[in-house]
Image 1 (cartoon, rainbow, N blue to C red):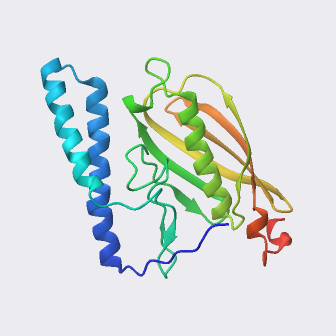
Image 2 (cartoon, rainbow, N blue to C red):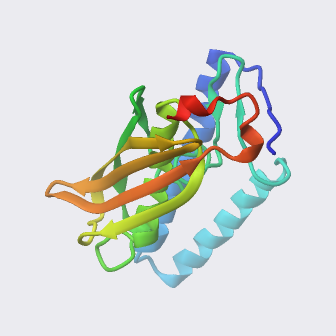
Image 3 (cartoon, rainbow, N blue to C red):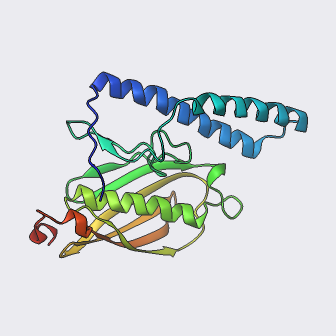
Length: 215
């Protein structure tokens, strides 16, 4: 289903890409936050708008067709830089930096600011789902049983405050090509959102895979 793309980049080139492209995305996140919370005059907003449009035109001068997609280097380093949760180049992404352990656990400490608000002062419920979906999927992959989201069920125990949060997910079981994962978003007082998900290795990826690996 997906074409495999291998980018022959050196470690130094990858580091430079993270510095330059990641720096641009981070600066853009700052711009988004400033746009939401700015109280400058209308005249100043109009002036800034013109500058932003000019900067956008400069970046449009050379770009790839369509979305970024996913590629990797010969050593297996994944370049999913357009991802809406963890994408290095995606200013929409918080971003979430996910850590993994081989027993099938993934976690991240994140900060969600004004751009992710739903109810006043609280994280939008859809953003909570977005983040949990990503981290739960990475837990499944970390345990050696990757898959795409089949179902994701959430229980919103209370409002999730904007600010510093901890996300953690872990594998709870397997059935054939299905991997079952649980997880939660927590603040300093404990879980705010809990998740149960099923991640399924898609049919197009099953050739050569052994079902017992998922049991």
